[in-house]
Image 1: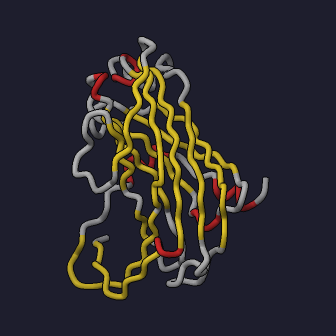
Image 2 (image 1 turned 90 degrees about the horizontal axis):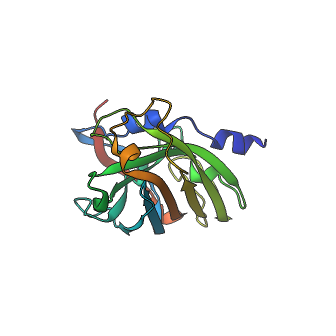
Length: 222
């Protein structure tokens, strides 16, 4: 396996579900660099254990709440560290109200897009859960990322990317039928009793304009 692909296959999303709360601001100013992913399209289809399907609408991250029948891709902006590394993360919150189960989360760690090359196809670990907030019980699966355009590349920090930088790629997953027979998910969890399958397609794009450096950004607490 090529080294750049080996590095792209990241660890479990279970850890990501626990790590993604943003540190509070401490006052004062500090240098800050960020990278943003642009969602250009997407569909989410939820299948019930009874065999019916519901298509959820993707709404902008600016929405303050996840309304019934919608999904929001949140935390699409990541910090670029002084060593010029980016820890990207996809965090999709959905509210399929037709199943009376409240919101649930699909999450997955993703490689720094600057490392992606044209025609790369990689898999990365994800997790999706539908129990109460904070419940560690999830059902894991793998998503597939496919690169359709790759121009430019990485540049030294704090420039971060070349002026012509552009990445276009898609993320697809199909959980297949939920298997709750191994005891890792409580039988009463709605993911077992109501939702039988989840299919996701996301179209993402990133350009040089999505990388920002602020000499006087907010300082974050450790």
